[in-house]
Image 1: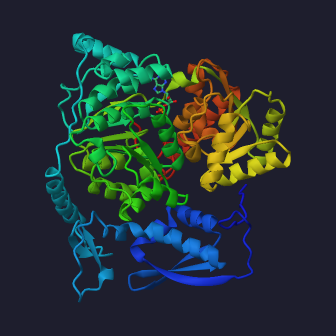
Image 2 (image 1 turned 120 degrees about the vertical axis):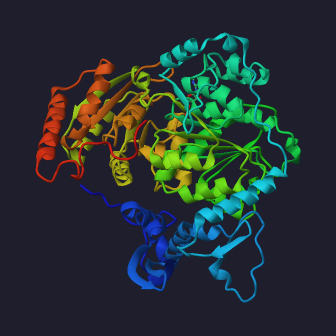
Length: 611
Ligand code: AMP
């Protein structure tokens, strides 16, 4: 069943048609895909954010396509702004690092773009981008090389690590989430640093950092940390293939603090941040900021900048130079281009959740950032998966990186969770009834998160609960930023015990004392299942997950069984039956003429290759 939210304008009010207007704008035809988005996703976002109706027509005028927009004036203006922000990336190359030549009088400035002073034509599909970027890169290097020397190597191997044999190091990796470490683009694996099994191993020259770790009370480095710290403290580029919840933030953060303090230019003489952390969503950016704020070292300061909120406050905050900027890609470029953020001093860049950023269409923004910052920098990338798109990004911007992989499924996280699979009818009302039943049985100390597959379902579930006077809050991509922040605060403080969420919006959210996870809709893949379930049962407590499983989820049954069995959980007979029936269907389908390997669909996970 499809749920269509009513259209709302910017202020959250239902749109009024009193001053209904229509307008037409042009966009460059080669950027139409950016405005429409995958399966029309961007158009839907623009419509629901602005309240206007947007129709990308098939009518063209030269290299431009006509877009019709209707609604009231405010809605139309908002939609035009949103479309402009989506199509502006190509144009935005023209504003780069203050090196733009003055255009000659006879040229039409609208048709010309400049990349670090290198002139070319806008919207020209014949542009040799490789040559443009090579030229840009060369100029960048010359400029940056003459600026200052970056200090990257701060590592002093602890005697206990030195004493560790290679075989012992390998054994430790095997026993700690099966860490796999290698140089991903070359064969020189021999010189990879051995893991640090204690905090002192990595930070013995930095007692203040050890003191901060002691304050938060962690026992030992997480697997990703034990291998990342020696690599990053040595100044190497690193790719961490790890999910949220593995301690990846601290893995790149503590070396970043040491990097900031260890540069030759004193901090008070730098005109911009030293460390840049790029994250796909506002929630993840804020989550990183919370983590950064837990550690105090030499008065290092940070600022989080993200889209969807008024930029004035961020512009004002940027007037004071901070050491670390945590940013979402669009807003970061926006503020840099407008001259509010000086990126010339950035020498340590983190691309957090790179796969998710690419999935969300941020590749142009990321490429722009990477071409603009110091090419001699240190670069860190984290990603839950390792598809070709992420690999290409790494090849473009990293120097002989060390890749650290810590196991795709952190099954240990599910061992403290009682996992229940409830078979329900494939009908939203049946699921809602099951949810109501559960909610009626909740105790005052329960705190739950309810995962829905779509924003519209999340909206529907929260309004149905609210109609029954059940206090709940929700978080998804269509909600205003302030509402999302309020929702996070309400669930964290315990003021509201039920949070309805989608995966994307809740990514990076770290709520310690959740008692239950409800999978109202089964997740898209089994990694996400493990990830969701692992949000409860933390900090020495047990948790419970309840997954509503319908007959249309049958393709997940085969992967779900080993997870449940491994954790000693009850597997309903029907789940085994579904797995068998699904397998049989695949065999039958693949044996049909013309439906073999080339057939559509199939049971494969889709998306990028899992490591
Ligand atoms: P992350 O994967 O960065 O999202 O981290 C998930 C959670 O693990 C955060 O709440 C961290 O504070 C916590 N954490 C990070 N490092 C450790 C550690 N060595 N031991 C225990 N918890 C940790």
